[in-house]
Length: 269
Image (cartoon, rainbow, N blue to C red; front, side, top):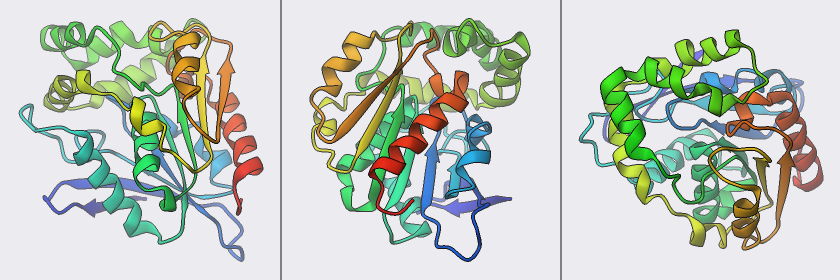
């Protein structure tokens, strides 16, 4: 069921709780953070398994999904995103949570864990950019010229790789990315070239997991290994595949990897 959390500036974050745990046990909270140009629908394939073990909360970040759209001139910053996440997570529980993010949502999850380690049991990031990818201006130009849905259609195969069906591509284009506010996307993209959390990841103390793919068109395995080597108490899992959105392309495999990781590291799973 869709619920709303109102931030101090009036922005409404839409979110949903999925809980199929045994009602007589105390289930830990897991928060799912989607990536750029997406919404909580991006986690659809993950939730059936996760919600048997956790109280799973998926949210739409500001500007995305059903949450309040942002004007193109909105001053995006990492501080804004962290303030939003901290206010939201603090409203859910006072106990440490499991935090899982994909793409830039994984970046935000790692940054959050570096700032609020006591709030985290485990943090997991699927194909997170630690430094912004190149080519952002090309995306801006394409969104302005073609519109959001046409841009999503043009770039979706690279995200999801060569193995997914055209029907799956169409769903992601029409129901997920294609529904995003154009102004939110353009404003966000004007900020994202400054993204750099290389120093932050070195301060993460809770157990962390990073998942990447062998054939990503955005970043090489070697580049991921280089920054991952600077992290402490962290595991790197490498998936064979050519998608750079592994959470969307390989949800069953990624879910299994995350569950195995939490079974190994979490105090209460």
